[in-house]
Image 1 (tube, rainbow, N blue to C red):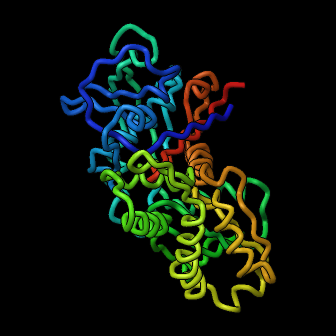
Image 2 (cartoon, helix red, strand yellow):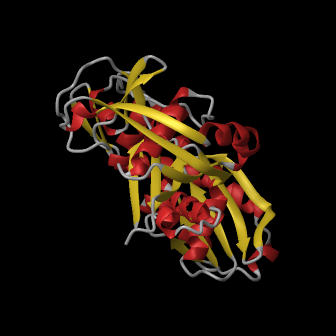
Length: 346
C-alpha cells in the first residue's frame, strides 16, 4: 500500500490553545514540547500564523528542518507503524556537506508530542517510533529512480524545478553522466521578480518568501484590500527566469553530442506544474526532444526516495515483522514537504 502526503514547508512558534479547528492531523499540526516550545506547522501555520516561514535549503541542524522532518516521520507512521526505513535527500549543492548530520538526525528512536485537540481529540499525545535504517541521496537521484521505475529504459535528460533550486542531468541506464549535473536558482528567482514589480505600486505587508510563493501559485494576491491578478506578471517573470537561468544552464551542460542518443527530457518538481514554463521547454527543445512532465511532478523525488528505502532495507526473514515496517521517502522542500510511504499491507 502506498500513501502520499503534501505538507507546506512552513512553521511558526505559537502558544495558543486550540480546540477542534481541523479535520485531521495533516491540517492541524501543532508540535509541542519541542525544545520547550510549541509550533504550528504546515497548513495550520498558514492559517493561524502571522509570518509562517522556512529557511531556504536548510540543514538538519536547523530547527525548521527538524520540525518538518519529525512531522514527516509522524505522518509516515500512520498511527500504526513504529519502525521506519527512511530515505531523504538534498540538492547537489548541499548534499555532501549536509548528508552526515541528516543521517545522524534521522537514525534511532524518536519521541514526538503533538496537540491532538486541533483535530478533535482530547489531549496532547505522544508518539514513539524508531528509524532502523536511513539513506541520504541527492534529489535528482531520487527523481531518476522514480522515472526508471515507471518503465523508462532509454537515455533521458532530467530538469528538476524546485522553489530553491533548479537541477539538471543526463541519465543513462548505466547511471548519471556526472559531467552534465548542475544546480542553480529555483522558482524563487521568478517569485522575487514578481514581488519586486508589485512593490513598485503596492505595499505587500512584509510577506514571507513562502507566503509570496503561494500568491504566485494562485495567480492572485490581496494588497491593501485590493485583489490583484498576477497571471500576466507571473508569465513575464517565468519567461525571464527561463531565459536568464534555465536555458543558459542547459546550454552550458548539454553538448550536441549528448543529444545524439537522447530523445527525451523529463520535467519534475513543483515548477513543472506551471504550464507556461513547460511551454518554454517545448519551444526550445520540441524539435529535438520529447518534453515529458512526470505524473504528479512535485511527488517525484519522494517517490524515488521511498523506492530507495524499499531497496536498501535489509532482508528480514520474519514476514510478519516486515509487515510492521513502513518504507518512507521524505522530500523536505523549500515550498512543500512531500512524504511517500509504502508498506507490505494489502
